[in-house]
Length: 151
Image (cartoon, rainbow, N blue to C red; front, side, top):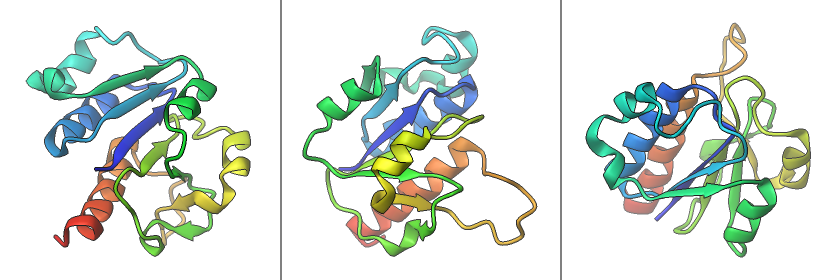
């Protein structure tokens, strides 16, 4: 199974929607670093509805803690600034899909370290700088599932 990781998410409804997606597919959700909300926040819970008990939630205080917990696994980092398309790689069980915060994305140090594993979702018109976080996660998760399960 794949896993989803969010670096310092800021908007509770986005995280709630992503948690709901993770519950639906059985993917663990990693939350890394400083959060822009409390995990007991009403709007976060409302966005996840009653699915929070079904989410395998893993909390990491720092990026280093997250890397230590995922040693030996492939991390795919997503950024509007990456050059390689998310559809051009072969996902595998155990891969971790890593997304940055809504305002700042992933830190430059992470994108540099994982340059060969940094992917983007195309936005051909160039009229917007990024997609909504929950939308981006859904797009990539279902591409990975399509590849892994032939859907």
